[in-house]
Image (cartoon, rainbow, N blue to C red; front, side, top):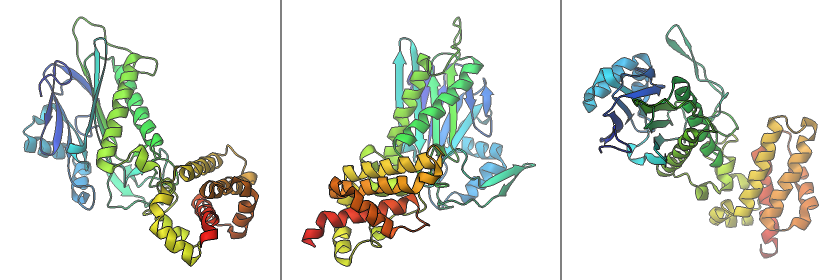
Length: 385
């Protein structure tokens, strides 16, 4: 596809890769392990699907880590691209699920192409690491996490800009891109698989930002939030990231409006709301609940109450709220969940007392929420049991 989305850039889409081919000289900054950093001699930047997301990547991942140049050479040979002038991002995500979005302002054009998978590898900055590097060797550390070790997840981003950037602005564009991606994950409440926190990315995210070198024009010097360039970078990446996560993982605001989804980050890999409610419901209520769990799970009033509780739990974990008040705070806001399920806000004191009766010192935030949902559900239907 010639001149996409501007003169000097051609987009090539193959069976398992998407490439930007530079018809005019470009400056590239990338996280690529082979031919990465800031380069002015690159003609092709491409993103390839190396494997399927589950149970298929082990040997390929080892080769890509131990000898990235050999790995790039093999990919270039397969796709008939010049090794010396190519830089590659690699992922398990399907190239057909890529999100592509462009923005323009006067003569400035920015395009982002994003592929994304976050189900198995989403994490928060500062989560426990899985390995450390020493003298060129990776030594494994077994982290305390909830992820399937065979499950993959990567968000790869390629950004193309039709104006030249200074080296400083090029580096700044990486900061803007990371913030834009993270903002989408926060809005979708994506859970870390390595801690009970919201994710800021995955453990293997990669990026390349490419800008066309222009003659007789001074390079753009700022890609921050106050600059139009920064705004367009963020807008394109946000739109493309949302698109790919919808296609690859089915993530959308409607899908995320779920109590079960909100609670996944608290230690249960395949979270089953009905199975956890079973511990607090009578037999009759449980049988009814099982048959109607989707309606219960996606009830917007209940989801709002659960989301509010979990935000309070985050405030506690960040030491914003004093630790000696945590239990009282949790009891009050969990009782609000019961009120939301039953629509009996006048019963807030009774729900708090009932939660106190069930309370155990080992409770996690998810335990408060599940017990509260059960209490509210039984109150809602107790006259028809």
